[in-house]
Structure formats: structure tokens, C-alpha cells
Length: 60
Image (cartoon, rainbow, N blue to C red; front, side, top):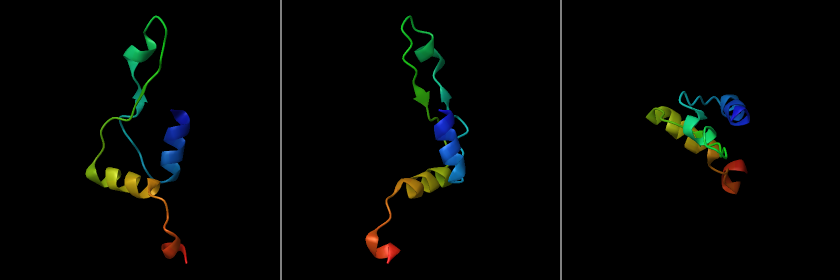
């Protein structure tokens, strides 16, 4: 989760609700789940742009 937060921050993206799901770590056998949470439409658009692969035509 810390790595994801750092990579997103490097791309100028902050997910304010990013956290570990408390119920997933409180189980008898912990299976941590990272909750990405909600974000604004602007942040969602920036996240999509950051994840979209660059097209070869755009690079040339």
C-alpha cells in the first residue's frame, strides 16, 4: 500500500481513501485487502491517463 501511494503521488495522484481494510487483517488468517476508496472525477481521469499505455504514434 505504501508503494502504491508513493507511485501514485509521483504521478501527481492522491487517493484520499487508500487504506487497508480493517476486517481483512482482523481475520483468524489475515488476508489484507487494500481499499482504493472513492475519488473525484478529476482524480479518476488522471488515474486513467496515468495507466493508459502511450501509443507509438504519439511518441513519434
